[in-house]
Image 1 (cartoon, rainbow, N blue to C red):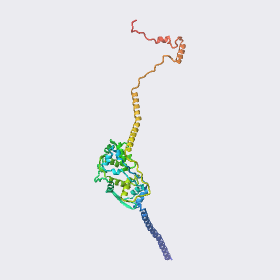
Image 2: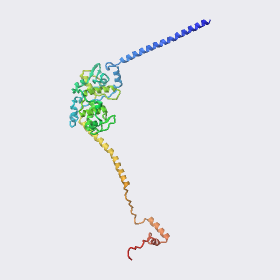
Image 3: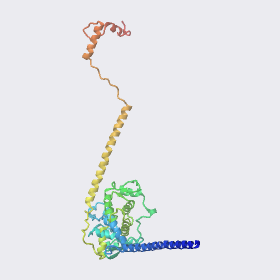
Image 4: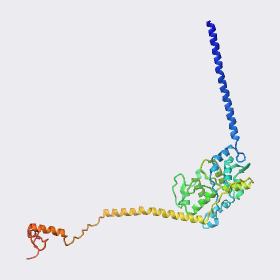
Length: 385
């Protein structure tokens, strides 16, 4: 009987073990199925994008997350003839950059935003990249931009400067401000630029090295201005391509999208399809004589404001110096002469004193005889008797 019981226990245990193994196998099968379904969903998600507008899923994601909300910074016409009394036209014409100062045919904002979102196949050493626009591809290179605008090629440009060849801050600020200005390490305030340099900064920050706010300039823009004014060689076509790539790579920043008219010219010259259904970007007024007048007025206003702010401090300094002089040289004491006629109250008191002493005189303030003798002056012994 004992042996049979043991056999039964062994059989029941083995059955329980086999029962426990079955759920384990089911779980592993479920895991495999889950992995397979997840990978298939990922593939479906990556392939699920609008191929007519975007080169891949990443481009669509960048557009929806960043580029479709970005502002577009349009170029402006520069009236060089109105600035002929300044050195600005000669600095720009010497480089054959005039075509970049006359933007035409502004596109829609949607075209510019899709252009930047679809940048891919980047080659940094050659400053080139490919864009995808509504089913068509275009390779953007410095040579393409140079040929499009008739720009002169610059084989070995000095700008951007090498780290060991960059100009000093004193040299740059002396050229821009006419005197050295300390640099705090973040940005340079342009409010005290000379009038000409202030207008040139507006041209650069609109058409050549665009940025939304021009009150403070980054170090690289300060160097660009210095290179432009000092005659340093600049390959502007490579610079434009490099800046386009910088804007693309910093998609999460608040940088505006530059060069919309240049983008439209690239698209139309390459027979790429345009994007209809949106209004074109409005171009602001030209940069010319009116810009000079505005800069002069702003400079005068700042100078008058700083001068008026210094007036209270100077007046306070003058008052403190006067107080110091008074403390060091006090004025001589001056007594106010008393009136010869006593007041009625004084006469009344003198009269009561005379009555108390038993003095009767016609003059209520006459001196008593005993007091007169006591206080009589000594006889003059110097004169002969």
